[in-house]
Image (cartoon, rainbow, N blue to C red; front, side):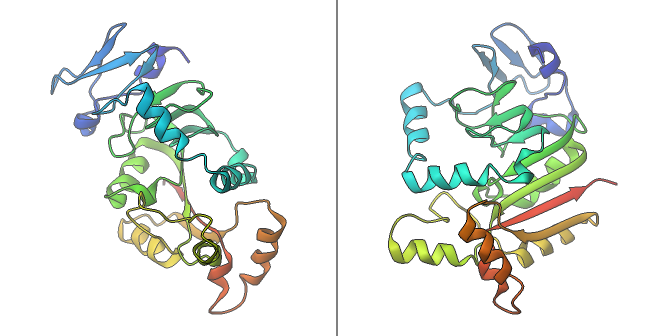
Length: 248
């Protein structure tokens, strides 16, 4: 996908509901409605209201490279649900799954068709992409309901959302051992399956499936999945929550 093709899918994140065509030059794009300008950095469209410099970007990336987190992230991205190719991967990190990939930081290595943007200010037009993957983003957002409604409007067919299960016994293990936590200060919300299911229903999305699962292929985590069938306490043995939403 070249830059022109990519920009045919993009719009001003502040004028998103208008589906405005951006004016594009070699160095920047601009919104003809609000007159905001967005730089194009080495061929990468940038829609961040604040652009971190290299030092800050590297610091932010390295903060996520603690041994326990890196190991967990690598495991999570080997599960079948992660092998599917999506049209757009929001918050792709260092394990991009999309034909178009987006994050607020620069992954290493840089994935194909990358856009620097925030999940709070998505620059994609309505019905512009076929399917969307949003893995481990929704817990970071201050307005998750708005985000979910927006990505459903952007997608033509399907949306996949994955987040941490706040009832998972592993989080209590991390707290006791002091080796890290699944939930940290960057998380605005802690989700359980009932809370997320109710939110999806209240947003009016009937063709949605919300379920508990373990995305890690780790043998111990797989074994814990069998305990998930136990009444009342089964939720404690599932690491992740997945939402599969199909548009009518």
